[in-house]
Image (cartoon, rainbow, N blue to C red; front, top):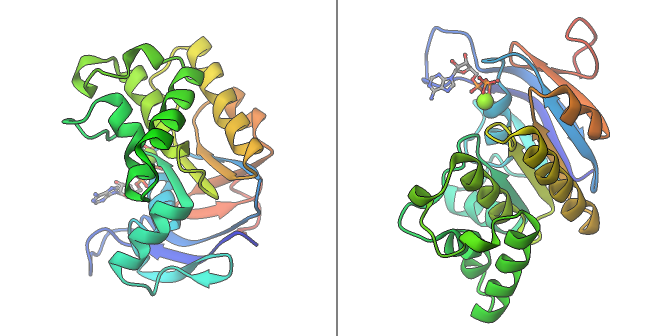
Length: 230
Ligand SMILES: Nc1ncnc2c1ncn2[C@@H]1O[C@H](COP(=O)(O)OP(=O)(O)OP(=O)(O)O)[C@@H](O)[C@H]1O
Ligand SMILES: [Mg+2]
């Protein structure tokens, strides 16, 4: 199994009396699988992606990648695994403001030590597929929210990750651009046999992914939230 989460609990403020953002969330995703994560606002979807990618460490429970525990490792080790194996599309793009779109997309492959020529070729090919090739030399502040989001998608794919986690990657796109962006995301992941996990509120997008996981009150369900927790 490529990615496993077992009984994740996450509280934003340690010792907080409030409800946990994750409250026993479990899931399993195989290599090459394409999964939609759906559920109401505030149910824990973004927090779940953060735990899966090792951006935060769950208060309880464990995440495993290729059978190896992620949660017990140091910040530096988790950052290395994230750089090498994960691609992450943040809900609000989160580009580096001082870098051009091309430099933002190149960032993961540069950090991994690939040659400048190879980085540029990969970045430009993906930016072309996502329809933002013409904007390569602009800064994030000089493009629209949807163009920034497509840049974030390119950045998540550029280093050929094993797992791509995308948090509402088409949330600020019109229907037609959203469809093209999703189909490139699906296509690139299928070509590379990468697992793709997409958080979405859009039924049409969820329908295009192979399987749905429902999140409700910090737990994962295979079908409706009234069904059994997985
Ligand atoms: N930084 C934070 N500090 C404290 N509580 C937080 C923080 N981020 C999220 N939460 C809380 O954790 C719970 C889960 O939030 P999360 O962002 O995972 O929801 P979500 O399902 O992604 O929602 P949305 O669909 O609106 O993006 C919510 O109750 C939210 O208020
Ligand atoms: Mg969210």
